[in-house]
Length: 194
Image (cartoon, rainbow, N blue to C red; front, side, top):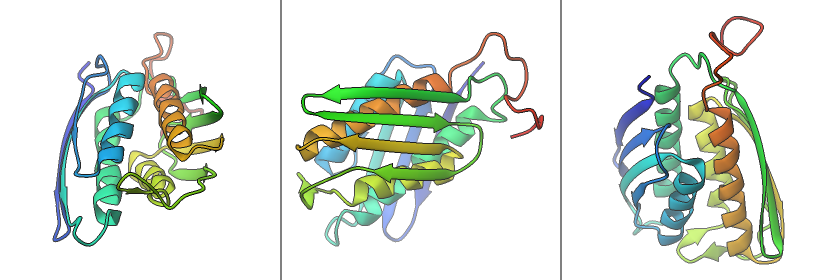
């Protein structure tokens, strides 16, 4: 089964190209122009056991909003494309990950229902060049185009630790949710469709 996707999106604000392999080894090649976003997506691929190539050229002379949002929208589309009809997947996943004083929990339904609840208690406005308010916005954008329900919460005192724990928890929950269930032959829903 080939569970890969190649998605490109070009607008007046951004040019995004993503290649995703759901059954990868955790390899990542990420270039968005926003260093901390690159760090989070690299960690996401590594802990999600996804192969992920992301190239985004955005209007960073304005700010990081379009670059972060559009990268997340295209990544979600890549997940939706790679999952296809979602037959045979586990569908649900959850994980809790600590990072020093921070702890994050992610709960995922990858069955095609887009929704996001994100509660990350950031104290500052930025982590490197990434606006902290863009992190929950990116998760919401990912949920919308991937067809995922995501509940992502965290506690902690250090913004870097909170963000990194959140993306690691998200990665591990997604890894479980999109994995193949050897006992499932169809769509994982009593409705018989996603």
